Image 1: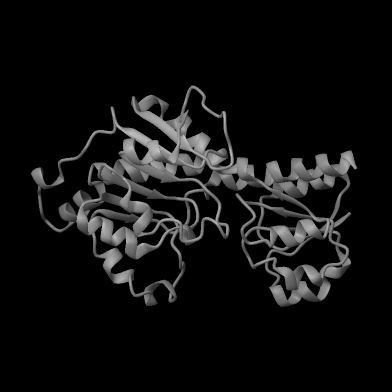
Image 2 (image 1 turned 60 degrees about the horizontal axis):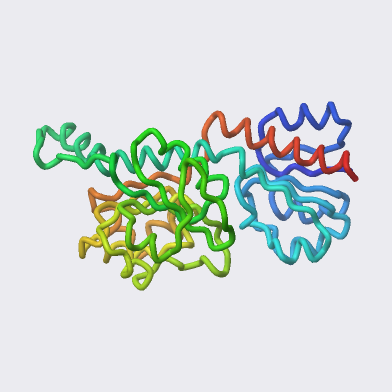
Length: 309
């Protein structure tokens, strides 16, 4: 096994590969074009988010046996085609689920207590106590859409807030535990005060959150998107904010990310003009701790797989 590493990863992975006697070539600054010229010589690939491992790329990799992603999910990999080619996929979802849970709760508390607005106003010489009166999280119902590693981590972290946590996952059943109760989507829309998304981006979830989706919620909600930006149609959320269907919204991910492309979207100026919207640059799962854990977990998975062959 000779593995090409094309993204920046924590040195713990290299240390563990060295100890296990796994050959690798660490090239964190390499470009896709450069990778395409040499990938046929490698039986393994480790990537974060540098480029799409699409069908065309996989066709250049006849010897590829495994792809590891030092991140959550495999949505930058053509998973179906890779599996059809007999390639084993190793995401490291467990590595940043705590970071995502903490970040999204932080965004929720900031929304509910107008922390960003209050901070900005004081810096501008304004002291508005009544205008920044907040809501308490205690006693509310938090709905999690998706109950994988990230959903479970968030549910556990919510357990000290005296909230009711309900969860819906189309692909799992029987997952109720001390932190969350499994419910139908019908119960989600009836009960939710807060809705947080923890599903991957697939053909089925792309554009899932549109006007029709949001229409069914019975109560005004706080909306949290920390999964994948392609899941949500931003104009639908803006309309929900206008009508009062959504009290406040927090996005760590957006359908279009990075500038200048983000600034060119027709909904961008409207989104950033609202003081009941909080944005962060896709960093929920990217902490100093998760940087280590993602690489550590990925190394263990790959070593375990190779030892079991």
